[in-house]
Image 1 (tube, rainbow, N blue to C red):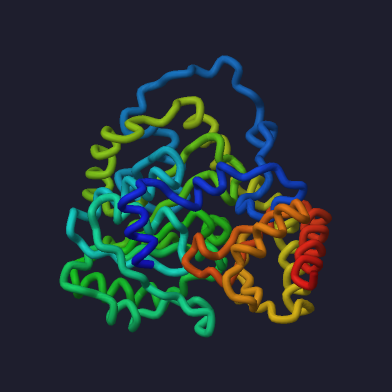
Image 2: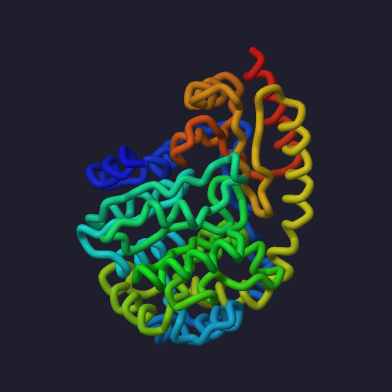
Length: 364
């Protein structure tokens, strides 16, 4: 983790996202972490005469209203941003100062490591162990705290494993946050699967908890670039003002489309449930039949993380891409080089073919 943090501080980039954007074409892409793109027809009747601009200095009021209603918070607790990436950037930049200490989960999503380092923080690893089911251990958090710790960064569902943050562990973390005067940031972009089923956002647990999400991974609407932060109203207000130095305001056509999506969340998210369930069953069978492979099964969502039992997977991933034109994400980008992340938001026939090619590459 320390090498990843130093790298982020000096290079000012996300190595993972740079890798993703530079990928060559492949026949089977198991590296994608989102559901298929949502068609425009799923958003309801077209609005050809809708205005391209409207007054939305801190978010278009109908959008703020829908988001507040979805999460059971006051509109003053919502700050909008250009996707989950900017939401996380905005939250982290607001919550820390240069010289602070930040704990970030490992394995973990690459930008969540590099952002605190970019803003001058020292980044420490909060290790989530496979033998513990990748659970967040509050005792491990306590042991890792320093007098300068101001923020703990997690994801729920966990990226890359899809493991859920347990309510009892979140409650214990909140107690630590109260005791030590720190905040907890929870990236809930994959947790939208659970929100749609009636689960509460982590932001509801305490004013010490800040949550981020967007219309990307679960909704298939990444092109809208609509994300948000849920935070205590005073903190959310600071983030709204800070946003003037970043994305400032969202594109109004995206705001209007986002409202239509939120009004149809059950249909849009529900349309992918059967697909993801079928693919999870297929991957479960593949892991069970593949010598050396192991995993902690995801609670929900479109990503799973498989330990192939052969050490660093980087060379295997490159060989798979070049020789079999099949792509998975090497675990090194999450701080766990022994694994690969496999996306479940793909046509089941393609997943079957991709897993077969992985089996051939493992035995070849």
